[in-house]
Image (tube, rainbow, N blue to C red):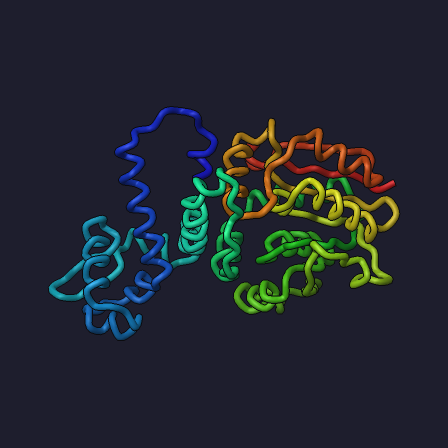
Length: 325
């Protein structure tokens, strides 16, 4: 998707429709648990029982997966193809299974864009925490390390960091690995999920705290201050008004000379920013992507100085850092 969003080249509509159909099928199969269930050979009857599924539906979908080469058939038994194991089962660098269920949620929202363009509000569906967190966890390690490396170059004496909305904890763990104590602050259902799913409860010098940073959270850190408040990929979810409030709140819990760090897609610098704003239009009430000038204004008005904006992740994202006072 990122490559598509960053390209203004013409594409073949027939090929695009074909790819879209295949991607939706693979995502649905992953969400239904088919690939995991086929890690060993099974016939349709055994698979039906394992997944509590409809036999006709299973047969049609699995035969289609065979035609695409992601499942292999031997007599009346099926097993995931070798080329698919790294994509859908093994959680290595080729793994895409974690992000595909979230892709389905995004596409479901995008299909409602005609009504949203006419003024309808995006429907608020119950959060699929697992799908969203696994998608966020698929963020490349090198992008995370690049952002954390630059933060610690700018704030060399940092001892602690507050990771707002840090989800699966990739940034928190990267800070901890560099000798900085981290507090991951996110919604209660998110913390409950990532604590066990990603083993964050066992990470030394990482504290998890439940709360909603869209509300006044300063009192929850009474008597505490941080050297860095890190806000990774959250500003695009909210309106300009809410982002101003959030940056101001971040400043209220920074220590003297503390630094705010914002990672996001900045309009005018990231080639993905305009298309990602459409994603926010479909999936949030007020979200969008914002310009460098807007971020500079918000930070200046909140009392920040020495504002710096650099390109990371091969320019697809930007890192904005600024110091309080």
